[in-house]
Length: 136
Image (cartoon, rainbow, N blue to C red; front, side, top):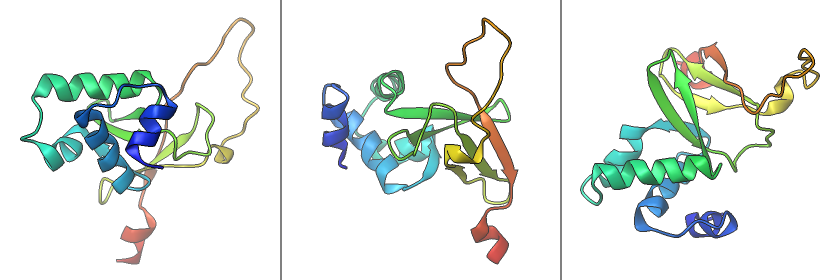
């Protein structure tokens, strides 16, 4: 699916900045990227405000989602790439710093909460060494 198709499917106005952000995330395959990794691909094309507004719009529309590492670093990934419920785990390689979205089937889908609670989203982060780093 192309960036234009994603924007159209979600009813989001197509802007050059949004298209560039999505193109970079599509190019990254299943690897989440930091703001700088996305922005550096087209740094001179947009001002900071345009870039951050575009990220916010894409996130609010559930086209992308954020992954927070160690309460400091934020990475973004395409939501559409997931065989996904809203709740799915991420794997952070502590060696190369790569973050990958994992299939939600890895989790026990029978999470039992006390009466009256409703989960809208969750951050589940697994950390260790990725297959690429293990091969080295």
